[in-house]
Image (cartoon, rainbow, N blue to C red):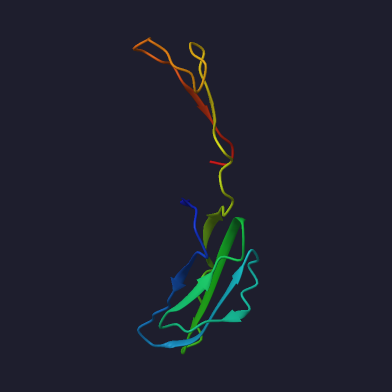
Length: 110
């Protein structure tokens, strides 16, 4: 599972079969594939922030169907908090004649 921040994010889904595709469907977060897609390639957008599962189901013109295929996506569009700086050895924003300065950096949402 790849964690990605920026959006909107999604993926292109395609379907191929030597005999030809009769139908191709997908659905987010539910294995009941009910939304048709173009088997030659269609962009589908992750529905929002969080962890989602894309389910894909395909049938060929001879009547055979695929076993459901699925992939997980994780989407975080929240910005990190403003970082906090501290130093166990120095005052922040003050002059020092020490050559070595220790700095602690902390933030949330990263």
